[in-house]
Amino acid sequence: ENEDSYLYGSLGACCIAVFGTPQCPFIDDCAPTASPTQAPTTCEERKFHPNTGESMCTNSFDYPPLWDNPDLKDQYFFETLEECCEAVFNTPTCSHEDICTPTSMPSVSPSGYPTKEPTNGPTNAPTNGPTKEPTNAPTNGPTD
Image (cartoon, rainbow, N blue to C red; front, side, top):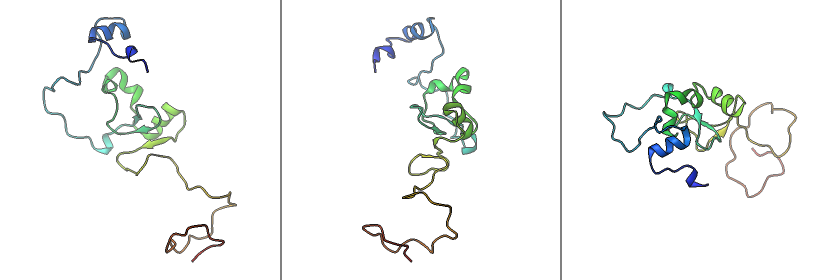
């Protein structure tokens, strides 16, 4: 990407280029805080937002500090995963990462396991348990 479009020599130059005025809202990540930071939020307090690549919704703290600006919060933060999916992807379910209920990888909700070919319907009962040892190739029929 063209860095000259995003990097400026001063805050004033950035404000003029982006907002057309020499003063604008900003967050200085390098400035020390006046007091200790607040305690971590509980999962119930976290809000969902798109990740920075807008490829999924998440409730992590990994987002640009500018999104904390009161004028922008309503555009990026949502009370529920469904609200985030609807606003960002126009669908009630989407790829997501819920740090309160972590998985090894982000997944699309709901997720399922693919079958080798279409099935006519669900099986009548689950199998007795997992196979004892993995096989090198598929078996010709069901195993016990």
